[in-house]
Image (cartoon, rainbow, N blue to C red; front, side, top):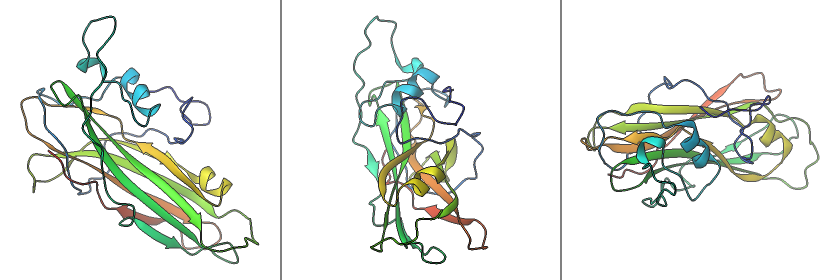
Length: 230
């Protein structure tokens, strides 16, 4: 497990400010991703997770997927599969004169080391922007804004998803600090892909946000899952 700072951030990661939660997050359906081969699914080691989270492009394989050589072979990966930005977007009307905000979430899933042994990663990207200019009210807009990203698998194209790992990221401070931004990433913990079972992998996410001063309480937003890949 990655060591977090006192403020809940992962050192050296600019866009990820979430706190890790248990892997028993609620189960939601989504699309899925690629096969490979071990008999059980395991959470990847902290070293592999840190390598994953500190690079949005090049990923290092978990310990179970590396050899005992001094210089491991470079990690290979299938193209990342993402749900298009336009599907998971909404307009958020803030109380009073605070500017209306457009928020977009995007779920992505990726298989690394296509030849066995392999591992899988999932992430949710958050972008936001104001829809009004000039901005006259710069007061606090969100009491809370949290994203829970889940990495899921299913035994067939139309089977039932099983949550393999999850992580909750608190982006409240980010959305209050800036009126627009992009590429806030919430990563589920990566997992190994079994070598003797064909699985369809996906990333799903839930956003729960609470608007400052609207007295309506938290709002739950279920994002559509990433595309299916085997």
